[in-house]
Amino acid sequence: MRFSDIHGLELTKKQLITSVQRNQVAHAQLFSGVEGSALLPMALAYATYLNCTNPTDEDACGECSSCSKNAKFVHPDVHFVYPVSSTEKITGKDVISRSYLPAWREFLLASPYGTTIDWALVFGGENKNLNISKEESRQIIEALSLKAFEGKYKVMLIWMPEYLHPNAANGILKILEEPAANTVFLLVSPQKEKLLGTIRSRTQLMRIPPFSDEELSHLLVNEYHVDSAKASQLIPLADGSLRTALQLHEEADVNLHVMFINWMRNCFTHDFIALNTDSEKFATLSKSAQKTLLLYGLEILRDALVSGHNDGQLIRVTGEDKDFVLKFGKTLNTTIIDLLSKQISDAHYHLERNANAKMVFMNLSILFAKSFKR
Image (cartoon, rainbow, N blue to C red):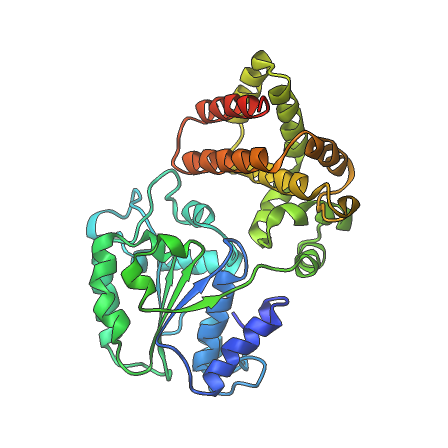
């Protein structure tokens, strides 16, 4: 992975390149940003640039031995740690990152913007709790105790460090704070607030911004061949995340926006029979579609909040969705919108933890109906 493989985000690329050119490479860096954005690709491109033997002012050369190996994710001085779970073939103390390297390389080549759900599907760990075990911390220390094979830097890239078992996190504190010379930790996390404070305090924060609307539009239309009109509908809901936009596109035939609008109407009229039917329908959706429905709801509420300003020019959704938002916004105030947003966020949290979907949506429907009475 090279910087040229990532569309846009030129200022971020320049900042990373400059740190190498000025010999100001922090030994422990926390890459933080939106899940499904350029978070992981940017860290991978940075790792490639660090050991390129013929870099330019804009990118790694892509031709030297180091770049060739990094392109295949087989560089001996670049180590990867990521959340895993047991499978039929891998159990016990073997449940560590290096046991899954072939699947990991496949994932990086095919889905560098992917999520933990995408990753679990690749290695066969779906519907299981992922983590980074205490044994993994021993592997990290062992790997970094060796001299670099051929690169200037030894790189330890930890993807989703929030999955570190507390004992694993504590096990790497010393080496994270005082690594050997030319050792670089790259922690890649979309939820840095879930990291132990002792981990965060030992790292230098590198914020990776989400894609702009223009950058996301270019990617969807030119690289993923999404119709431009459809792309314009997806972008307001994606929050700068390419993976979210693609997921929304994959689920377009489910008509989640229609479901949400009808659901809100039933909540507003307190039609609890219809709301029970809605909850049953939502429970039959895939887990990702359920979460996307809630994310769509948050975007609608955001637009409802700003709908009364500048003649609705701040509204991001288009077409029929915009017409609904303009009407919906007139029935709400800031207090209710804040309350509804919190309720949606709580429901999303419970779905993440495999709560009963019908119960989650029915409870949310009741809360919404009560809120509309205020």
